Amino acid sequence: MRPSPSLLTITIATRESRLALWQAEHVKALLEGLGHRVTLLGMTTLGDQILDRSLSKVGGKGLFVKELELALQDGRADIAVHSLKDVPMDLPPGFALACVMEREDPRDAWVSPHCAGLADLPADAVVGTSSLRRQVLLREALNRLGRDDVRIQPLRGNLDTRLRKLDEGGYHAIVLAAAGLKRLGLGARIRHVFDAAESLPAAGQGALGIEVRADRADLITALAPLVHLPTWLRVAAERTVSRAMGGSCSMPLAAYADWLPAGGLSLEAAWGDPDGVQPVVRASGNAHVQSLDEAEALGQRVALALRAAGAVPPPPDAGA
Image (cartoon, rainbow, N blue to C red; front, side, top):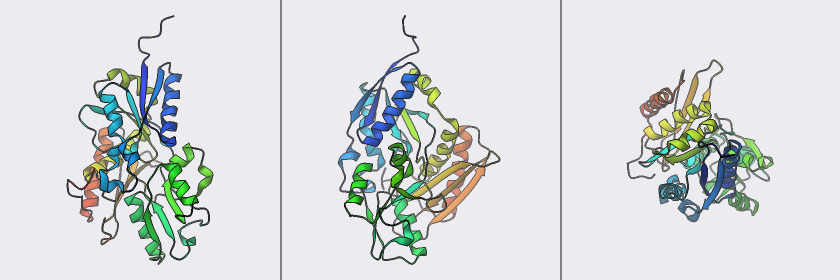
């Protein structure tokens, strides 16, 4: 019996961290369940190699996707699976976001062997995070507690590396994405999950996106069953805020959308001054959203409100 002409042989380009491989294997299993033949192409990206400097100083989160895009461009791979928060707001010409899958927990997680939360930190404690957004929001929360003794230090590396650095005593606590911990069966390491009011998530956090060459209509069709439209509408609104604010990882920016009980989409955004001089600025809005265009219109409206409240986009050359 011949295979259906609509069934494809698909190679997935993926980073080689344990979390990235989990994500790629997850997509592989779903596609195989639809009848496609799927293999993985593991790759090490520049973002994985540069661990001694913050992302905002070495080119941004796009460093995690450029090598994967080259594999798509030259035909070594057909699709690339990304954590959506690592995907630049504007893809290079010739590439498309073909699929956004159902979101895992989008919130930030507090991980500590001894401290249940910020209020339990000892004097002169060290908290680790790789995110400028988390640094700004943590400092705001610590200031409310009168804890200017606590130091927030950079923390780079894949998830396992970050946990190892915590366990070796380099930090009293670290803040990670809850989604990654849960996907790897490490949910027991979480001492506290921050709700959005405590730590507003990054645009796209917890969602997986699948990138293809824009001319691969066959792949876009094959990926359609994996699309989760409610998630895609949420992250489209969030990513529009980031795009309108310059899309730079050198700018502490949070954007989080969620569905209201009545069916509308609520969007919150927060901007932090990279130099820590101005207080955190916030804006929000909601709308009845049924299409990506409507989600992006909501994102534009909230981004304008954020600017009106005092948020300042970075210069064009400030980062990716």
